[in-house]
Image (cartoon, rainbow, N blue to C red; front, side, top):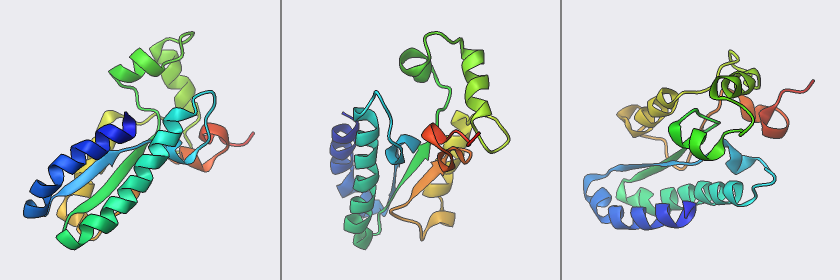
Length: 151
């Protein structure tokens, strides 16, 4: 669903975007570049989204349509709590554990961090940016497994 839904939605939007010379920003994940276990499907689907971003940028560029993705790390959202949280960990404890893994200021990202990145990518300031994956991860993907800094 991660790939199909994005593909079919964009397919329906392209005729309108070509007329308006619009911009597409796809939400991917930092896991698109990291091996993750036991969940193999999620990172594979996000890697496919990243490649779809590049292919669409190449295909739609001549029509003036830019295509990019944002690749956030773990962001505390309602859906994260419903489907991805540690069952043995309350929300505050989870946030402090995740923050300790972030090289930048030891804080977790926020939905506002992701929104600001999307706002930049759709703005005129990013008018020459296409086919890119903007990591919103506080530097987490620079470390080891799941971006944990070496001990």
